[in-house]
Image 1 (tube, rainbow, N blue to C red):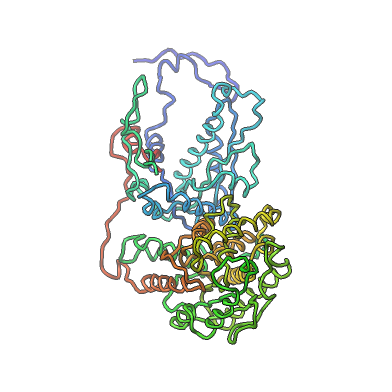
Image 2: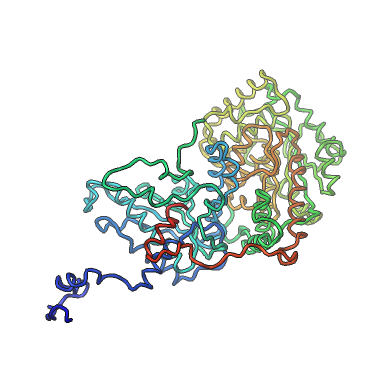
Length: 633
């Protein structure tokens, strides 16, 4: 049987369709790919996953070019091509993006009500692990310029950019790369960090790299967070139909209720962190079963090059100073009690001294601003005898702030060189310093309602709380220019305390030497935040020992993107809370080093085959419909 008569084709210019109506009528499916190619397309769609764990190996430039080229070939209304791609390689920038994500993760936890703790168990990003970040932006352009198709649906530029994201993701999967979509950040923060103009919307921060996991189903399904929706629940005929089963559980309404140059800043050791995770995967325990301790172990390895171990020796630096505002009744105790407590600590009689002696740690009591003689046994680096009353003027001069910061940094260097410490635990002694902490927290966090920053401190009564709140409000008003500067050094000098300045310097010095810093309470968190505001890379070398009873402390830790190891409503101060948390790090290190692997114990884990997650349906389209992975990340 012969086909339609052959007729000569007229010449067709390059770049135009060479087929003719007769050919298309004779074979309507002639544009179809071969079966193997079709199957590959549906396999890529079905096996696309949101990846959270990455290897550190670099992505070759030619592979990156192909993936970005695929994104650039996405469909766009009116051929507007509004997508723009920012490739982020800098470890410093990725560290800052991760801090934005960690902060929002902690802020959003409470939104999930009773699911808050399971939410915090989810690994939501691999920003620093992945060697690259790709920020996909939508350039909205000039709205006065008419674009074909946008007059009726203005959002088509956003829809077109979403298509570019999907193209990029599918091309990456075909190349064997992993993509992780990070949605825990505030777009204005990312815009400011990457200097994205106002007319441009950052739509997606994508982690890109070789995956250190090969999930056969969506991670949120595997963790029990959400469930797949069957395709039949989302496909309708002719008209809209309301169907409760079409909404995944995760989407249903919840019940009501910079001074360091880039080449000088230490970098997290991602190879060591991944090596620690690789060993943890082989140990005789479920992966991730230690929750926040697994995260702390991996973070420690990235700081030091190895997981923590038993017998860690801390350098405990307790900075002591007096505060001029105590004359206004911001504490139940007179200012001279600061010197008395510092003297008792130096004699070994306070909580920090007992815990330091018990653990064999190196303790230093630093007099950086007590208003009396330096107690015996304390280190004398007094800058001045307490701060001035900050309602009369600045708490200290910029030079005094800098001198206190140097004192803290120099003492840390002495501890590292002379005592061979494994970590720094900063602490403080200073009557009235919870009031100073509340003032600094409100200024650094730009909090308009300061009541949430003010707590009872050492036990203030209702009248005392009122006095503290009044001083906090008055101080912020009096130093509005410093607050509005948003510069941490300016804020510390005008509104701070000498021990806060010393601790900020100490934390910076430890981070420069790749020494982990285990933070204690409200004051040390504020000092760390001030240091991070000046040099963001410092955040990579911080851990939170505990969350204190002070209400503002949680907000500070959230801003730093840190989860505390303990939450016992402690008010002890002096670094004692962090010392109580330290054995947890030592214990997780002991488990990591001492436990057997599955192979050593002769235990066979479940075997996961390499088969495609498709259901085996003969039609390739049916496979992806039966496994709607691209709708549940």
